[in-house]
Length: 134
Image (cartoon, rainbow, N blue to C red):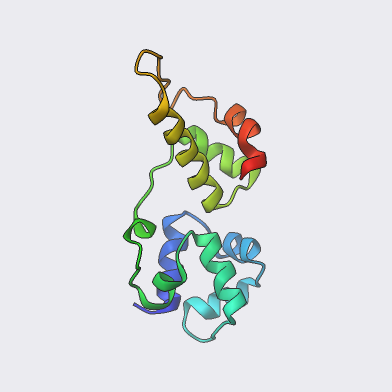
């Protein structure tokens, strides 16, 4: 699989159009289209921006292999968190961080305390309380 194919595959996994990724990575849609069709190359800075927005390592994006297998792990986000991310235009890395923060908090809670499920969790309130740490 080529670099362009990996970019396109990840973009479609995220449910993003070329417009969305281009805007987030601060590149033109035409340039992104050329990248995905292997008609152009990009600078290291642009590659890093695209990798960050897609939540992929540079290693994986360039070679298809990753030194950290967790980077290729598929994440199923709670619908309420996905909706918050869409509404606030949060990046994929911020989404992962929010999910991981909540998991860490739950892991440190006493088993005597009631744990609210992901579907009933107040993601907007949680985001407001931790956004300065993101």
